[in-house]
Image 1 (cartoon, rainbow, N blue to C red):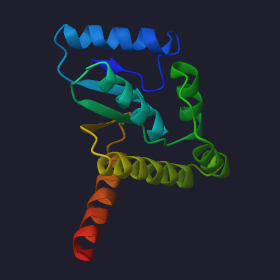
Image 2 (cartoon, one colour; image 1 turned 180 degrees about the vertical axis):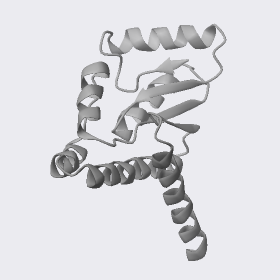
Image 3 (cartoon, rainbow, N blue to C red; image 1 turned 90 degrees about the horizontal axis):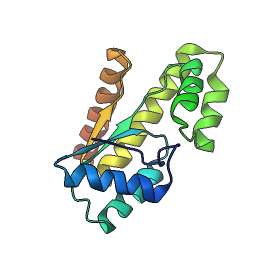
Image 4 (cartoon, one colour; image 1 turned 30 degrees about the vertical axis):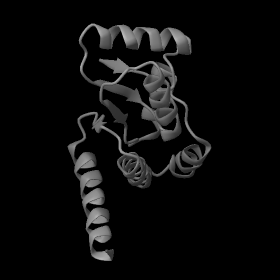
Length: 152
């Protein structure tokens, strides 16, 4: 099943959680989030689900932003909140497609590392058919994990 860490833009918080509880009570055994750019929204939502005994794995949905038009469309379609830090990055590189893609990959990598460090049940990367972006994120994570192992 799907869930919205920022709350579905057509619902309120309680209604969203009620729908989620209904899905789980009907047999859904894991949930994948709509994309989000602020991990705090995911963590807060997870706390709310735990209080309601929604005890299934929550998979975080991450979208690596690869171009400026893409993020504008995402904002229109799903009302995703853009943290100030990320908006600054997007604005800085909006006229340099290659740099924006690289910045988007780095931002998504940082999000995923934070989620893993916080014990997330899983991560779904919304690739938008850009396999090279996913490969780069996985390489980044592997490189960081190897660095951590060497530091121990």
